[in-house]
Length: 357
Ligand code: KG4
Ligand code: ZN
Image 1 (cartoon, rainbow, N blue to C red):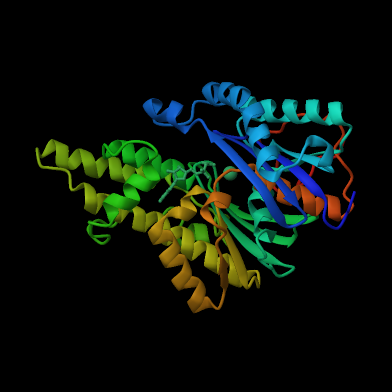
Image 2 (cartoon, rainbow, N blue to C red):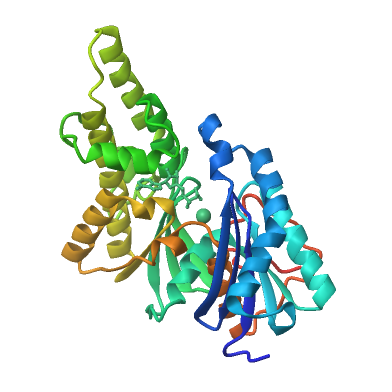
């Protein structure tokens, strides 16, 4: 195997996307994704059991599609990487079982890797050059995290995360309150375009001085997020119009809600970058598609002298290419494979980049 440019198959099944990607070194050869999103629509959110069953059905066709696109067979693969956590337990188990079976049948080394670090790992693909130390902001239906990456394969720290809902989850819940359907993110993004973002002043979670503290004496939640109070404030606002028998100003509420989310995420992320001397930040996760998030983050990064890296959207949402990308970095770095005995870890900490046995 070429350890500089290993060919790695990456498998992702932590939520509702079954992803199989193939990379050679830092080149993406294939990125096949099958999503069970449509099956969750009528429930207004991802149902773990349905997601796990969908992975079981989609895995083999998605694998075949990735191999066909890359014009490779399993013999050409040097190593297999799979998301071992964090994520939905049942969903993770399908991908990990499939990966173990493939590793056993082919004799290829297997790496059980961290989903959050894989989101950052896509940053090495497509010719993007990242500095040795950089920051990352992950925002999706499952995550809202600020990370410090000192080494993609050896040292990643969690600077802050949500203490309740993920940002995308808040979008999905508020969209339901406004009757905008699921997934809520794109619907609110669209509705907000016709609204006034200053119409309502919704709370910015964990932004009071008692939570934030100062640079010298940081508060417990300086870099953390909370969206549950915001969600309740939107619900009260909607109820107020309903009780008064007045039409609900959907566009204004959507725009004001979105501003509250995006304001707090971008200000906390940029402050964390500055305080940790990080001059580059990578944005990942499904909410990276949000127009206002991109706009405000770009503006705030520019004023703070921080370079913003946003991978193509297909690499920001959950996919196997990101798992393969991190796997290839681990192989190139000489990391020890995880063996065949590891379990999934639905709350795998970000500091555990690859599982050891
Ligand atoms: O990364 P992703 O595909 O899956 C995980 O949740 O891991 O992200 C999906 C989330 C959903 O909550 C969806 O509402 C949100 O990303 N999303 C958006 C937008 N597009 C997708 N949120 C805000 N604005 C958007 N344009
Ligand atoms: Zn994800």
